[in-house]
Length: 336
Image 1: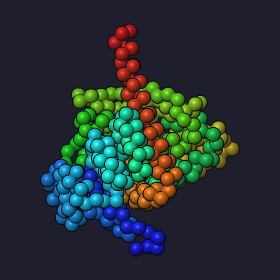
Image 2: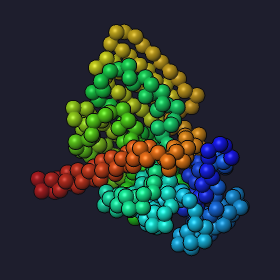
Image 3: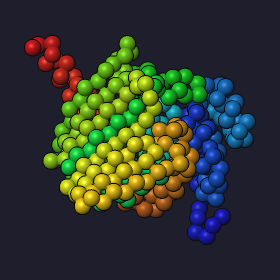
């Protein structure tokens, strides 16, 4: 145990592909900070897999696990529809929470979580791991050179939704809460917010829905005062790619998945290349490791927690406003 470090016992809710491939390697690596005591999953095969890999107790009932294990912290990697209930149960027992995005699926649930956080004094930290990708870190270094940002265009292109270990819940509206705007838009919103200091004013959105009423294509514009962010997300693309262009008053920055091209008004041009594309994989244990360290630090640093919590508020507020915008657009189409 490193000097000044206190071991935190963990219980995990949801042992799917994200947990197995991104979270478990991190927890094992950070074994001076975290110890797994119990794992919850409704799927018997996944419970058996967790027992084999972790030598931890497994459960199908959240109340039984919390009662028997009494962990310091709860890690939530289950599908989005389950997040709020697990978070509230954990906070009620004085347990800090580290939760996969989306933290919740509507603003009403966020406000309920916020009240419980205030009452308990505990931490609810969302996994915003993309801020620690080498691509975003380098973009944030370079973007300072283009001056005051006027506009950002972002595209996330995928051929289909990611598939979990036991089922493809991302295309079930009752489990996922929404479609690609929750799955990928959440990441894009907090990344763009880190580049723009303004609060958002309005959102205008259009979605292409599948037969389950899930958005498979999302086009939405966020207005941050005079700064505009146009975002395109697709699960129906012919290619897998992430692209961003930022326009500033002193130049432009193009990010094309595995390279950055910076063009400045003085004629200077810079390029940077990455070993792998941002879009290359879905599990990111190296990025997630830094989030775990942030979570550990946030247990003593309330400002770190509040910054993350406000990012989640921004994400769910923008997503909810996007759905409202689309609903209003459809209503206008019907009556015009």
